[in-house]
Length: 202
Ligand code: MN
Image (cartoon, rainbow, N blue to C red; front, side, top):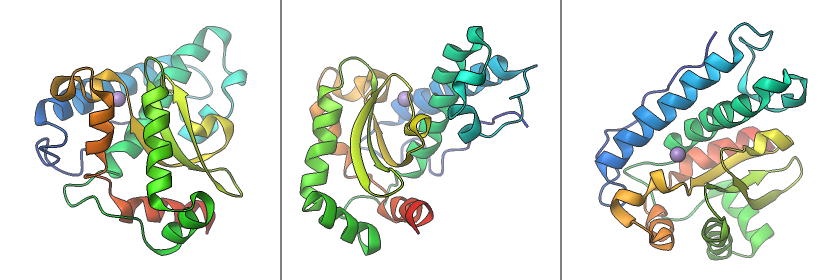
């Protein structure tokens, strides 16, 4: 079964004023849409055509040499954006609770410390990429990745990722990536991140 572009779980303008409707439309329909189209084209006719995101991204070396870059970029892009839409909400913001909130306090000291680390990773990521909170199998961890590289490639479970490609913010924030990152926390969907954590670490 080929990959499919998931519907946005809210309207294009639902995250305003923090993320504008035109950015959401272009980002979801055109950028994510292209990752899905290109991922399916790269895998078509290979034994990986019906494989899961996880099995493809943890076995890139097993793919034909001339497919690896396209698969890494486009299956990675599909994985990253499929999570990104879900972990945002028009009712977002606030602080994490439950087991995730406790684990964040234990690992990073406080939610503020985590937020600073994630923003810092996003600001320092040169060019395009993502800043991540992941479950590495035994603990929470924060790091950034270039391009569309997914934490799944190193067998980590992405719990929260912020897209810092210019296409994610440029219409509204131009070169002010730190302002976008600050605003992003108003739309974070903690209940969904908490579900991801429970599923990964439970
Ligand atoms: Mn993006």
